[in-house]
Image 1 (cartoon, rainbow, N blue to C red):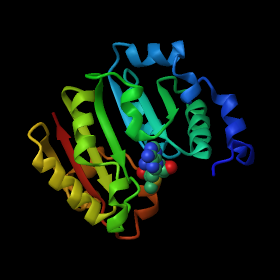
Image 2 (image 1 turned 120 degrees about the vertical axis):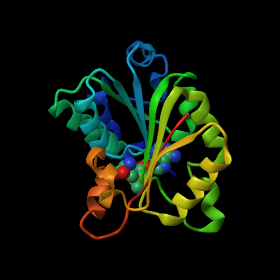
Image 3 (image 1 turned 90 degrees about the horizontal axis):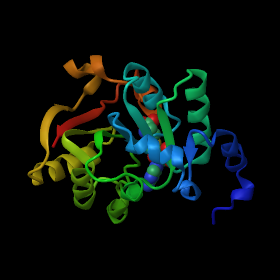
Image 4 (image 1 turned 45 degrees about the vertical axis):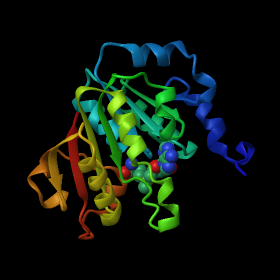
Length: 213
Ligand SMILES: C[S@@+](CC[C@H](N)C(=O)[O-])C[C@H]1O[C@@H](n2cnc3c(N)ncnc32)[C@H](O)[C@@H]1O
């Protein structure tokens, strides 16, 4: 059972209430204004400790960024990184990514990224995978017309599973595809996540697909 009193990062989160929001902050005026603003909104699901958001937010200062992440320690580390760079265009939400529709309205997101999600390799656990047919329907509702959905993973089987799902729906068009992103023409525009930095140099390929509605 999760016991917040045993996790020091639950308390540390209090120091970053300007950036990190939890289920207690659903009515937060700052978060609502941030989400409802006219700025393009870019979302990272399972954002870890925020390297991808930090680097992306610097090159797109006019966009708003939101990361969803479960782990308190990673959320605190992310908030500290953003403050070091004086970035004011990122917010983090401590919530399951599957609950995104309870935070963000339809037809709002310009780009939705999933980087190195937990692969749940065992067949009996595959139902826990974030990418599913149902999830793609959620993506459809949340993205603006022409909005982008990007998926990156080191897990070949999860990638093939996701690509099959993407091919089975008629509302996502494939823009980029690579079974070895770092050796591909797309690597120039790629931003490394924490997990990706670990793989880089070890020779394992990164699988990548970019789609649009
Ligand atoms: C393998 S890590 C990848 C982190 C980061 N995206 C990266 O590429 O470095 C997966 C992350 O997803 C988070 N996570 C797992 N299940 C989640 C869920 N249902 N909702 C939100 N985050 C989740 C984990 O806590 C972890 O930080």
